[in-house]
Image 1: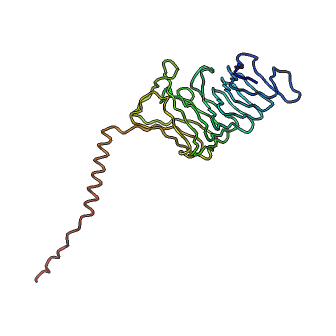
Image 2: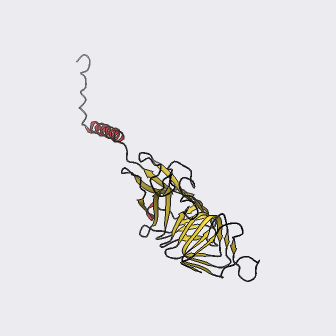
Image 3: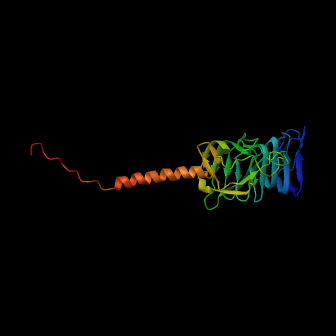
Length: 275
């Protein structure tokens, strides 16, 4: 159990494995690991493999390695972050007051790809932080991404949505600040990719842009999906010239409709020849 403390696995030979009953001789922890406002850092591609259930009420951060367990329960206030792979049996659920955040300062970078090898559920009241450094860059390097093997299930509702916190990262410092972002351009980022997506509805997501410091110029973020991906989109406000063209087009359509509604003049027959 860690209560307000930090356990860091970093470097050669720092893997921790726990077993039920007998097993190979490795470094071991208590049969049930609970983080209460503490942090478990699994960095430098180290692995954490547990033979017992894990309860996370604090933070678990990966730095390129893997986390496996018979089950992973995340309590209110829990955080899953970093880059690497979570693979608890039965999948990972990000529910009420639980946050998932690809990349982390402790894992040496705000941006990254966080993987889930046994499925992922985005539940009611959960949240994710989506960092953007270069809007036209590469997923996992210039903006965050979640990669799911199996089903990415959305069980959040419009009444209790899953929140996406959009945060800008300064490319010069690698810290929160203004990103490379053009408010006049349209963007589509892959927020998450999976074998399949189930239960998706855009109304089940809430967007928080308070940590995105670039100006939006009246543009807006939105969420969309296909059968295997969930996307975060940015739509700019059309430029004045575009509005003008749209106005001319609308006026032309209105005029054409008005012409069609005018009463037709009666046809006058010509007199017959020789009359």
